Image 1 (tube, rainbow, N blue to C red):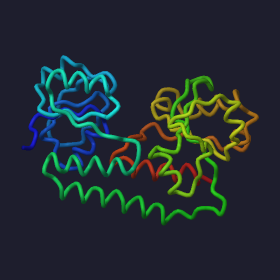
Image 2: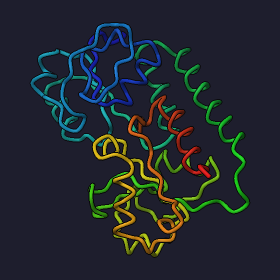
Image 3: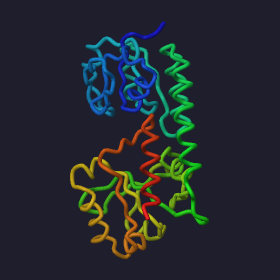
Image 4: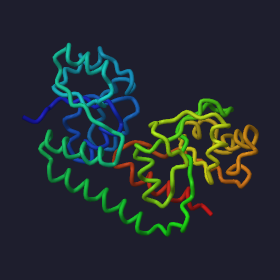
Length: 261
């Protein structure tokens, strides 16, 4: 039986439900979900990491879509006897798996197969159209840090969809360790000595602007080769960074940032 009252806790899951044209079943979405459907927007139920339990109960869902690591939320749903589906969201493969599972749930298997095929062929076309240099640029992808300083710098490890996109576009991750999101000091980055630093911080760019973020590097780490060579680049404020159909736009932007010169 197709669920009729579904809550989606994450922007990527809401995006994929809409990609399958199954959004008429959604009765609640998270604060950061983007609603592109022509249908009336469902109520917002709070942030992905801290949704309102009262709001979830009030909406009487027959299915809640969550990320697999949201163990506290899953525990709450189990106690409240609310059915849920938990999804992985690290890799491109996870996006495809999520689409297939949602296709089964909403009886939209054809739409799921079409969407997987569309994403796959667009990513493959981008890969084929990229003239990668003979020695790949060593890139550090930064996805978190404090504005106005170079503290608490978090980079992308090798198990993430951003790393998959980087490698498919002819780049190489400057970090080759095993952590999913390693934390770096400026000295740690100096030891890696990346050719290029790409900051994927759309929220910060929105607040302080790309120039301010670049200034942080010029003031705080002028000795880094990437900084000296003008190879610190900022992703735009409107970039959607999530494992959903947004990966196509993300891949295009990443390609532009890697090969800006």
